[in-house]
Structures are given as structure tokens and as C-alpha cells.
Length: 193
Image: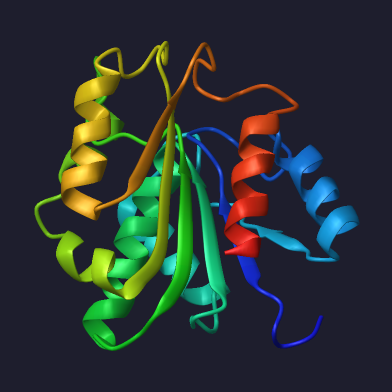
């Protein structure tokens, strides 16, 4: 891989692994079309994700961040990426990150279970700094996501907190299909950006 090619990390959804949903299909499409490997991160204890463990794992497995580094997050993966970027920007406020694509992202879930509740606490995240230092910020949501029925409120959160470009797609539920052309389209845009 040449140094001008982007590095793309993918963080799965709750209880997901590196082969869940569209991750295998997307990885193959991007490899075939752009000769870029997506680095899928096998998050620890992802059936009951823990914030501290996930941050430690990301710190250990992402060596370098720069203007060529992109992240794709799916559901809770978006929250893990936000917290990781917040930590890295605390260490180095001048760090620039190429971009993020957040799929089925949320701030609040309609009926949160106990182990999810800590992930809804975003008080310590410096969204303003993340918005300033992450050059490309795209969020795609569904109008019938079973976890976030108020998709318009969710959209407003991402727009106001992260200054993200948010698109609501019809009937994508939680983006769990094996093939998600809408995600591929957004990753292609992210790469070409």
C-alpha cells in the first residue's frame, strides 16, 4: 500500500465481529475497486462492550493517526470511535484526521439495556474539537431503525454536536444486511474526498 492511500478502520456494531453484516462484502468491494484494505477491528467482549476495554484495544491496535486515516463505525462502533478520537485529540489537539463515516449512529437508544447506558453519556467528549479536527464527517441513519425511532432528533444531535452531514435513508432498519449499497456509496465518497 502506498503512503498516499487512505488507512480505513472499521469498528463493528454491538455483538458484531469483523465478519458481521456487510463488513466482508464491503471489504472485498473496496479492495477490488480501490486496492485498499479495510482494517476491521475485532473489538474485545463486544457482546457486552465496555468503554475502557474498547479504548485500550483501539489504543493498542491503531498506531498512527493522520490526515489519511478514516474510520467507519456501525452503531456502538461510532461511540467507540468518538471516544477514541477524543482521547487522541486530548493528547495532541493539533492532530488532523481524514474522516469518519458513522452508520446507524446514535446518542440515545429508545430502550437502553444496563450495559448500554454508559455509552449514552457523552458529557466528556469535546465534540467541537472533534468537528474541527476531523475533516470529513458523514452520518447515515434509517427512518425505521428499531433502536432509535426518533430519527429526526438523532439527525439533529449529529448535526449540532459534530457538525456532520447527516442523511436519512428509507427502510434500512439498523443497516444489518449482508449487502448495503448505501454504505458502499458513502465509503467510495469518503475515499474520493
